[in-house]
Image 1 (tube, rainbow, N blue to C red):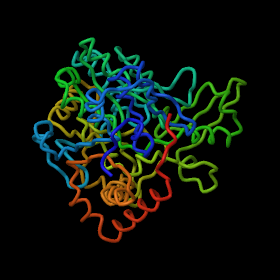
Image 2: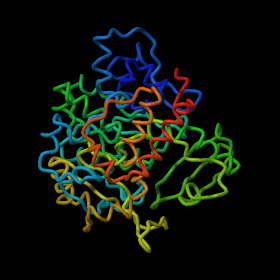
Image 3: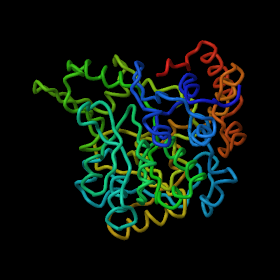
Image 4: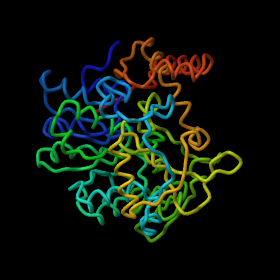
Length: 420
């Protein structure tokens, strides 16, 4: 099969990332992002969409099309960057953290993305920052936020694991003529880059794309199971903070009855007695770009290393700022000059030990996609991500395991979603 031909097919075959751009472009009267019974945000198609209107939307959908930095259409965007075979385009790389100690402490890591968002506003480079924040009414969920002041950006800081649709406001901001930055997951940034290729307003008005290294989007039940493990009713929570108030910061939950509970990073994700799992959506399992190759700046955690391995002991937060475009490098340098960020040296080669957990998914993606194709499943049209170089680095044995695993899961229907 080829790539999916409808939004419903994107959802059905487990390819939806939940970014929300389809709702933004087509309007909520026709497409609305809704939480499914499986605990993901997915587009619900409410009215017929003519083919001539659907085609450009699918061209931006990261479940149908994904164009990497090596594609001819992206040559100008990434001109001046060194293209690493694993870690993608790099114009500069360094350890960074927010110049404001309060922002550094509040944020999930070093507060680099928060600091850059604030700097974009205070410097006049952007009129708004599009990002996500915890829902005020349902604290385990996240909602898209358009911030126009640094205080609003800071209020939305801290990690948000789970379903979120950050791009639902993109068309409105374009229609309003506002210059804005996008802070979102790598797949969301891929959708924004695709929109830039077909909409001149997006090229003019979207001044920066900033992202993280993404561990995948877990479904809502992960947060619910953690709350229950701590003896709290998910429906009664008034706060569910994944990370922040330290680095990496504890998961913190507060309930209407006055009870609260916390869980460390290691307790959450490296606990053999856990009754929950990081059950990410299927699209994340085949992702060729969880490291934000299409962003202007990607900011993963700058973990402390001991004996060649990252540890998660509480410490002052640090990010790694990987500027991938010349514009991204200039933004980081301007933020450093203004004191919005502080920095220390770092190298691309240090990423292998610090973020080696990304290698299996990154290097196995081409083989997994081939397994899905052989099983008769549609897959996104993916170009510009160094497929053959990736396969050679993965090696024959690992690629074969990835291929067979994806084929078997697809034949068993493990990628399928009911949809909405």
